[in-house]
Image 1 (cartoon, rainbow, N blue to C red):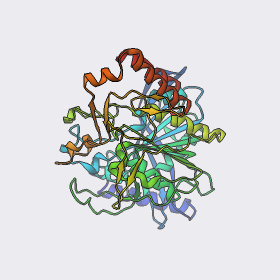
Image 2 (image 1 turned 135 degrees about the vertical axis):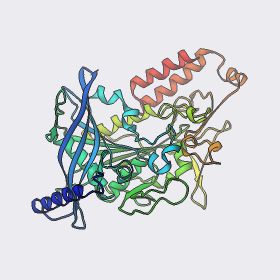
Image 3 (image 1 turned 180 degrees about the vertical axis):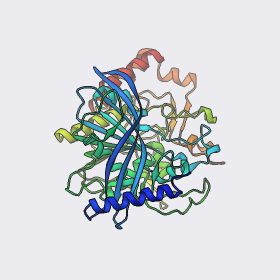
Amino acid sequence: MSCSRGTARTFVSLFCALLFCVLAPSGPARAEVTRVVVEASGVMGTFGGREYVWVTAAMEGAVRRDDGTVGSYRVPISLMYPDRDPNGFGFVDVVNTSDFWVFLEEDAPFGRRKIYYVGDAIFSDYLRREGYVYISVQWSRMVTEELGADYGIIENGEDGNEIIKDAARFLRQPDRIEGDPPFRPAAVDRVIGFGQSQSAALLLEFVRRGHNREENGGLVFDGIIGGVLSGCLGLNNDETPRPGPGPTIPLYHEVLPCDDPPPEDGKFISILSQGDLNAFQSYLTRHETPNFRQYEIAGVAHMPSDVVAMKVMGATRQNPVSFKPPFKAILRNLVEWIVSDTAPPEPRYIEGRVDADGHMHIATDGDGNAKGGVRLPHMPTVLANGEHVGAPLGVYTGLDPDYLDPFNPFPWLGGTFEPFSKQELAARYPSREVYVARVERAAAALLADRFILPEDYEAYVRSAKHGW
């Protein structure tokens, strides 16, 4: 019997609601983790002298809503945490569920819809080497409705905001675990939220609507990174199916403009790719407030090949350049901003103009590569002293127009790379030493400006030497 429709679940929900009404004071929306039930666990290995475990579990909680109704939820979560010496920071990976509203099951890129744990994919071992306590959380009623009660239960689309808060609250007070993992997580002092694309837009609207403040005035997230941000995403409980092409399933969210800056409720860093400016008109989020920074990375796509490889979908010219190195450095900058109030670098914007219809037209050089923004070593750069550095091997774009008709959003967002001819490459880089020097100087400038870490400076130089 389906619990989402059956009388058993109705009885349980009513009982939980009545119990919570008795125990909970009145006031604005509030949730509480009632328990975290471990389903499986295991040892990941040793990172930075710490042994890490992984845990899959179901997080259950009760929600008191603004309209006076009370309900409950159950959602899957994943945990990763060390056995000793955590760094005191929790990392909440708000998962990306865009497969579920862009594709039908049979049309999904890999043959079935999936949830993307992009925070772990991007930061990966860096989080473990640094000692973070990690949790991923599924927040979307759309997904629970599609996958059924065996997967999870979210009764109201707006409850997603409280579920996200509960993930952060649990990391601060992780005493409600039921089960037998190898060991239990230590409580953290501070929490960073992370979202990518769809879930980054969700977190920006989360802050804009005041959700990042607890009733006592404390912060839910001390800082947030919104990766390849695309507008703002507000949660609701509207069952209207998605208009236009794609599956006609209830969304329980709406995409909104981001005209107004977020309140000063924690630090927020927005990272955009070149493709985001063209695809999503994300220039609207160029707010400049004391607690907000935006960095736009030239010559990278919304979906680089090391995040989602598009060859399986026929995209043979996907932009291969990774944005992982600046993401890691920006996370470190955010931690320093939170702990010691060390301000991160000033915003970096890609150059261009906005037309009367609000579309961004990116300025390019003679090759067709974008100007401005954060410039990784594959982009030509002029340093403050006038030195020309960087070593492009071709033209790098953020969108692939081959997938506009018929429209396929995944390879479209993978961008393109068109290599220079052998003759052009030989003219630009007559020797290995010339090529390596240009990469090394570009990487050194990025390191000095705190846009990459020392480990990635070394990786860029090593790759240039071996890749020649």
